[in-house]
Length: 426
Ligand SMILES: Nc1nc2c(ncn2[C@@H]2O[C@H](COP(=O)(O)OP(=O)(O)OP(=O)(O)O)[C@@H](O)[C@H]2O)c(=O)[nH]1
Ligand SMILES: [Mg+2]
Figure 1 (cartoon, rainbow, N blue to C red):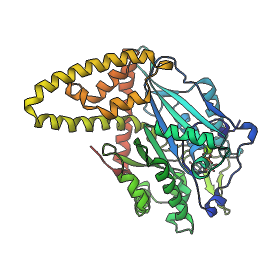
Figure 2: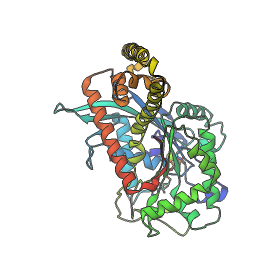
Figure 3: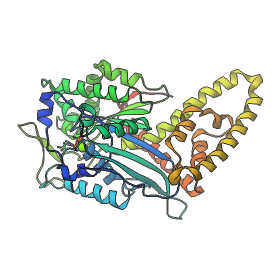
Figure 4: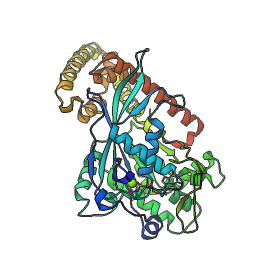
């Protein structure tokens, strides 16, 4: 089965004519099209984080999703947690990655506009010798990049679903096609036009979205073939993108609480593919995949959410100090509100259909009133997790451990490639 007939991740795409000619690929046959919203693999109420990827057709959304799942499906590389999909979605994603990995098989077909799929991944970590406990769920939306760039009767319904997914997103990954980036750096005519088109598509899709946005440069392995170091390439890519007014606006317009990063990512890794004379990316016979950087856009989501909470909480704490006469009364009030809030959430978690806390409640806590926990004397991420951990203490402990590891992975990347941070907040 084709991955494109299966997967569910959100990515925005488009391209100038010349670019489209280079990137034109076959679409999944009609019989294989469909809309699937896979059931979450877990029954207990877990907090849910929604991720949407946006990128032009051919930017690499589908291949990246298969590669991300492949990396996260078991604890590995110093990571103690894993992501678990439902049996059916795991089968689809594994089959897709196997197809990508098989150098005698063609690449997956482009995703059809009739497809719209949502993948649910439960994150689980070991807790005090009592096995793995689920901590939260990540929902990832997969669709055709064409939905972002063309009006079509066929995809009309899915364009609406995509808008919904974007408005519910906690984090958006904006994918820039690394091959376009490479050709732009090399001064190939039309390449900059296609990048410009991608950025305009992001502007259109994200204008009214207030989630965090990170930029992902896909097919980094092709850029590495220039022989330049990652640090040199990041410098060049930054300069290239920074010269684009719309890109600068996207970075600078983010809500003040978010750090904006550029992630160099290869879903297949170095040496797996090259570009032939016709401009097609072709697999290298007998090569094996060694994906690089694919976990990073994922692991930045939760620490960024908590950082946003923390920055807002610090701001409120400053105001709090400035009004010392009112401090005591405010403290008492905050404690009261915090208690009311936690008990209300306890009740809500049992009432929401499917048992999970809705994204709106997540936004409410994280986005609207993050100072409450601080005023009540709790560190914001601990308070956040406690209010969202409706099921058991082990789930909370697992969530804390996962977020800590995610932070460590982010810090390591920023230590190695500091220029990847386009804008630092906090
Ligand atoms: N070298 C290299 N090529 C890649 C990589 N990821 C994707 N590609 C190439 O890019 C093509 C398009 O990737 P897809 O993942 O199908 O693109 P998409 O964004 O899902 O496209 P639509 O489904 O049309 O929206 C693949 O068929 C590969 O040829 C990568 O990490 N490295
Ligand atoms: Mg696709």
